[in-house]
Length: 112
Image 1 (cartoon, rainbow, N blue to C red):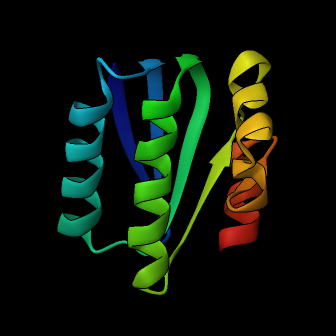
Image 2 (image 1 turned 90 degrees about the vertical axis):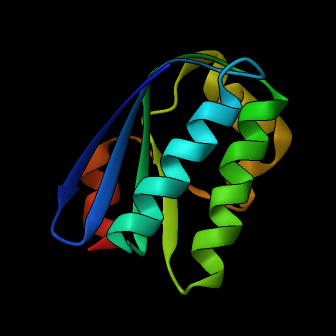
């Protein structure tokens, strides 16, 4: 799993590459928490365009970051989830909790 971080205005964009599953979730959780806390960001976009697989552990990572950011008055959303990953969002009901946008630019527009 590879993560790349980019900050635009006051929004942290996290580009994720690979599989978000029980093998990678602890590392991803730690890296996300570290960056979010270190930069004290309140707006986060998770770019899922390059996520090829996600299981329930991945859902747990996302929900955990949602709770953490939401409690501090922030906002987190997902962009560019497609295929089976998008299906996981829909079947799990996460799309009712976390906003999902078709592009990072759309998400940036809404968060800015």
